[in-house]
Image (cartoon, rainbow, N blue to C red):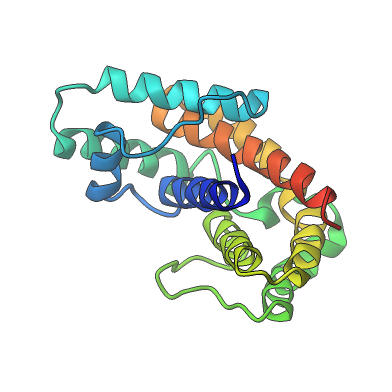
Length: 208
Protein backbone atom coordinates (compact mmCIF):
# COMPACT_ATOMS: atom_id res chain seq x y z
CA UNK A 1 0.00 0.00 0.00
CA UNK A 2 1.52 3.29 -1.09
CA UNK A 3 1.21 6.58 0.83
CA UNK A 4 -1.84 7.81 -1.08
CA UNK A 5 -3.66 4.51 -0.55
CA UNK A 6 -2.82 4.61 3.15
CA UNK A 7 -4.34 8.06 3.55
CA UNK A 8 -7.41 6.98 1.59
CA UNK A 9 -7.80 3.92 3.83
CA UNK A 10 -7.49 6.00 7.01
CA UNK A 11 -10.13 8.45 5.80
CA UNK A 12 -12.45 5.62 4.76
CA UNK A 13 -12.12 3.91 8.14
CA UNK A 14 -12.85 7.15 9.97
CA UNK A 15 -15.88 7.78 7.76
CA UNK A 16 -17.14 4.27 8.51
CA UNK A 17 -16.73 4.67 12.28
CA UNK A 18 -18.39 8.10 12.26
CA UNK A 19 -21.34 6.87 10.22
CA UNK A 20 -21.78 3.92 12.59
CA UNK A 21 -22.00 5.89 15.83
CA UNK A 22 -23.01 9.50 15.22
CA UNK A 23 -26.73 8.71 14.83
CA UNK A 24 -29.08 6.02 13.59
CA UNK A 25 -27.52 4.72 10.37
CA UNK A 26 -28.56 6.41 7.17
CA UNK A 27 -30.20 4.34 4.46
CA UNK A 28 -27.41 5.12 1.99
CA UNK A 29 -24.77 3.94 4.48
CA UNK A 30 -26.58 0.66 5.14
CA UNK A 31 -27.07 0.15 1.40
CA UNK A 32 -23.36 0.68 0.74
CA UNK A 33 -22.47 -1.87 3.40
CA UNK A 34 -24.88 -4.50 2.10
CA UNK A 35 -23.66 -3.94 -1.46
CA UNK A 36 -20.02 -4.38 -0.45
CA UNK A 37 -19.06 -0.76 -1.10
CA UNK A 38 -17.00 -0.56 2.10
CA UNK A 39 -13.54 -1.98 1.39
CA UNK A 40 -12.22 -4.52 3.89
CA UNK A 41 -8.42 -4.87 4.02
CA UNK A 42 -7.07 -8.14 2.78
CA UNK A 43 -4.13 -8.06 5.20
CA UNK A 44 -4.22 -8.22 8.99
CA UNK A 45 -4.07 -4.85 10.75
CA UNK A 46 -4.42 -5.53 14.49
CA UNK A 47 -6.62 -7.96 16.47
CA UNK A 48 -9.42 -5.48 17.26
CA UNK A 49 -9.73 -4.15 13.74
CA UNK A 50 -9.46 -7.62 12.21
CA UNK A 51 -12.31 -8.81 14.43
CA UNK A 52 -14.32 -5.74 13.47
CA UNK A 53 -13.97 -6.52 9.79
CA UNK A 54 -14.94 -10.15 10.44
CA UNK A 55 -18.06 -8.96 12.28
CA UNK A 56 -18.88 -6.62 9.41
CA UNK A 57 -18.64 -9.49 6.94
CA UNK A 58 -20.97 -11.54 9.15
CA UNK A 59 -23.43 -8.65 9.23
CA UNK A 60 -23.45 -8.43 5.44
CA UNK A 61 -23.85 -12.19 5.03
CA UNK A 62 -26.65 -12.40 7.61
CA UNK A 63 -28.65 -9.71 5.80
CA UNK A 64 -28.10 -10.86 2.23
CA UNK A 65 -31.28 -10.51 0.22
CA UNK A 66 -33.10 -8.41 2.81
CA UNK A 67 -34.44 -4.96 2.06
CA UNK A 68 -32.29 -2.01 3.11
CA UNK A 69 -35.29 -0.44 4.83
CA UNK A 70 -35.88 -3.47 7.07
CA UNK A 71 -32.23 -3.68 8.05
CA UNK A 72 -32.07 0.05 8.71
CA UNK A 73 -35.18 -0.11 10.91
CA UNK A 74 -33.66 -2.89 13.03
CA UNK A 75 -30.39 -1.01 13.39
CA UNK A 76 -32.21 2.18 14.35
CA UNK A 77 -34.13 0.33 17.05
CA UNK A 78 -30.94 -1.14 18.47
CA UNK A 79 -29.13 2.20 18.27
CA UNK A 80 -31.90 3.82 20.29
CA UNK A 81 -31.85 1.06 22.90
CA UNK A 82 -28.07 1.08 23.36
CA UNK A 83 -27.11 4.73 22.86
CA UNK A 84 -30.21 6.90 23.28
CA UNK A 85 -32.48 5.30 25.83
CA UNK A 86 -34.26 6.18 28.04
CA UNK A 87 -31.37 5.22 30.31
CA UNK A 88 -29.02 4.03 27.57
CA UNK A 89 -26.46 1.45 28.72
CA UNK A 90 -23.69 3.07 26.64
CA UNK A 91 -22.89 6.79 26.40
CA UNK A 92 -20.55 7.65 23.53
CA UNK A 93 -19.00 10.61 25.36
CA UNK A 94 -15.44 10.90 26.62
CA UNK A 95 -16.52 12.65 29.81
CA UNK A 96 -18.54 9.58 30.81
CA UNK A 97 -15.41 7.43 30.77
CA UNK A 98 -12.93 9.74 32.44
CA UNK A 99 -12.43 9.15 36.15
CA UNK A 100 -9.98 11.98 36.90
CA UNK A 101 -11.81 14.77 38.66
CA UNK A 102 -9.96 17.52 36.82
CA UNK A 103 -11.26 16.23 33.51
CA UNK A 104 -14.81 15.85 34.79
CA UNK A 105 -14.83 19.53 35.69
CA UNK A 106 -13.16 20.94 32.60
CA UNK A 107 -12.99 18.06 30.13
CA UNK A 108 -15.48 19.28 27.58
CA UNK A 109 -13.71 22.62 27.39
CA UNK A 110 -10.38 20.81 27.01
CA UNK A 111 -11.71 18.83 24.04
CA UNK A 112 -13.04 22.02 22.43
CA UNK A 113 -9.70 23.71 23.01
CA UNK A 114 -7.91 20.90 21.17
CA UNK A 115 -10.14 21.50 18.18
CA UNK A 116 -9.63 25.25 18.24
CA UNK A 117 -5.85 24.92 18.52
CA UNK A 118 -5.82 23.03 15.22
CA UNK A 119 -8.18 25.51 13.55
CA UNK A 120 -11.20 23.20 13.46
CA UNK A 121 -14.76 23.42 14.70
CA UNK A 122 -17.32 20.60 14.62
CA UNK A 123 -19.66 20.64 11.63
CA UNK A 124 -23.28 21.43 12.28
CA UNK A 125 -24.18 17.96 10.98
CA UNK A 126 -23.06 16.54 14.32
CA UNK A 127 -25.52 17.91 16.88
CA UNK A 128 -23.65 16.33 19.80
CA UNK A 129 -21.33 17.81 22.40
CA UNK A 130 -17.67 18.09 21.49
CA UNK A 131 -16.66 14.99 23.47
CA UNK A 132 -18.96 12.67 21.52
CA UNK A 133 -17.14 9.83 19.75
CA UNK A 134 -18.30 10.88 16.28
CA UNK A 135 -17.08 14.45 16.82
CA UNK A 136 -13.67 13.32 18.06
CA UNK A 137 -13.34 10.99 15.07
CA UNK A 138 -14.39 13.81 12.74
CA UNK A 139 -11.54 15.87 14.20
CA UNK A 140 -9.11 13.04 13.46
CA UNK A 141 -10.46 12.86 9.92
CA UNK A 142 -9.75 16.58 9.53
CA UNK A 143 -6.17 16.08 10.75
CA UNK A 144 -5.59 13.09 8.46
CA UNK A 145 -6.93 15.06 5.51
CA UNK A 146 -4.49 17.86 6.28
CA UNK A 147 -1.67 15.35 6.61
CA UNK A 148 -2.59 14.00 3.18
CA UNK A 149 -2.24 17.56 1.84
CA UNK A 150 1.30 17.76 3.26
CA UNK A 151 0.68 19.61 6.54
CA UNK A 152 3.15 17.77 8.78
CA UNK A 153 2.33 20.00 11.77
CA UNK A 154 -0.95 18.12 12.18
CA UNK A 155 0.86 14.95 13.23
CA UNK A 156 1.72 16.84 16.41
CA UNK A 157 -1.90 17.84 16.95
CA UNK A 158 -2.97 14.25 16.47
CA UNK A 159 -0.30 12.98 18.89
CA UNK A 160 -1.55 15.31 21.61
CA UNK A 161 -5.21 14.55 20.95
CA UNK A 162 -4.70 10.80 21.05
CA UNK A 163 -2.67 10.99 24.27
CA UNK A 164 -4.95 13.46 26.04
CA UNK A 165 -8.32 12.24 24.80
CA UNK A 166 -9.20 9.35 22.47
CA UNK A 167 -6.77 6.75 23.84
CA UNK A 168 -8.17 7.31 27.33
CA UNK A 169 -11.55 5.86 26.46
CA UNK A 170 -11.78 4.15 23.04
CA UNK A 171 -11.11 0.67 24.42
CA UNK A 172 -13.54 1.05 27.34
CA UNK A 173 -16.26 2.32 25.00
CA UNK A 174 -15.71 -0.63 22.67
CA UNK A 175 -15.89 -3.08 25.55
CA UNK A 176 -19.18 -1.61 26.73
CA UNK A 177 -20.70 -1.88 23.26
CA UNK A 178 -19.59 -5.49 23.01
CA UNK A 179 -21.11 -6.21 26.43
CA UNK A 180 -24.44 -4.59 25.60
CA UNK A 181 -25.33 -5.75 22.09
CA UNK A 182 -25.18 -8.88 19.98
CA UNK A 183 -25.83 -6.93 16.78
CA UNK A 184 -22.85 -7.56 14.45
CA UNK A 185 -23.19 -4.08 12.92
CA UNK A 186 -22.42 -2.34 16.22
CA UNK A 187 -19.98 -4.99 17.42
CA UNK A 188 -18.05 -4.46 14.18
CA UNK A 189 -18.04 -0.70 14.70
CA UNK A 190 -16.86 -1.01 18.30
CA UNK A 191 -13.94 -3.24 17.36
CA UNK A 192 -12.97 -1.00 14.46
CA UNK A 193 -12.96 2.07 16.75
CA UNK A 194 -10.63 0.32 19.22
CA UNK A 195 -8.42 -0.95 16.42
CA UNK A 196 -8.38 2.42 14.68
CA UNK A 197 -7.23 4.20 17.83
CA UNK A 198 -4.41 1.66 18.20
CA UNK A 199 -3.47 1.95 14.53
CA UNK A 200 -3.36 5.75 14.59
CA UNK A 201 -1.33 5.68 17.80
CA UNK A 202 1.31 3.47 16.23
CA UNK A 203 1.37 5.37 12.95
CA UNK A 204 1.71 8.80 14.53
CA UNK A 205 4.46 7.51 16.85
CA UNK A 206 6.57 7.02 13.73
CA UNK A 207 6.02 10.61 12.62
CA UNK A 208 6.46 12.62 15.82
